Image (tube, rainbow, N blue to C red; front, top):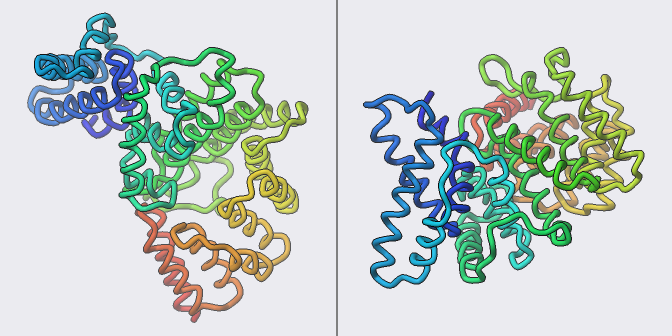
Length: 398
């Protein structure tokens, strides 16, 4: 075990607990960061404590209380309020399962813009860096940093309470909550930076929270659609890389390594969603993954589902993924014609898809340029290595 592993697994939990204790996001986040810094200094010499998560939470609480007492003595009204809140709220060393869901609902308050809701929650829950979040939103890092700071200030200044809202308030926040869980999973499914393709901790946490949300809102079909989407996508995790960590594309994966229990659960949820006949974007995406989970993939059905998805979510990212299905059904020229009509200069997958289609059409020089653009925008080592291999093959053909 490494301190980095504890950080990846427990950062969001610790921040969530400390936000409940102190009622202040900045205080909680800074205290948890201080506690991990202390762990880096201390644990290599003393060894890991029996409960690393409990140690982090307790240390963070003590650091925060000391800081707030110093600031309260200088008549800082926010410090005084947070200190009173903390002294009335005992800390728990173990996991508090609902704390992270509470924090998501806090960050997804309607007073905050949707993109800001999601960005702030990714920062606090997933411990994602500003760089990683900016990559998810296809915006520059300074822009994302400003959004996160403004969101924290608005929550503090408006006194937005840290709690799961009443039943009547849940629907207004649901879309933001679903977006958060979806993007947490996506960062785990294909990490935007680092050496490894997958971050299982983020994938599994997103699934756990989706299950908790389904228990809280069992009559919402999009909640179940998201859960099915995550289960079906995660079912392929063992086959998505080689033992050496190389990325394996869907069509080349060994399906015998897919998790049949997750597939069965996901497909069952998709069937139940279809019977409700209230389609939404997450249910449609889950249906697409359900089609992929049956061999061989029925690309005509996938294309029809992407047609439906594009109708309800008309975004360039959906359009570029639909172009892949079109290429499989109608040929690479048809897919490329759709891709060429899109404007996604900061989206690495756009350039990778365009490169592949150009390559299939024998336009090796243009494909090489597109592969180079994709490599430039790719922060993950496994994805970059795959693109570099493809670039090398394309270059030899040219």
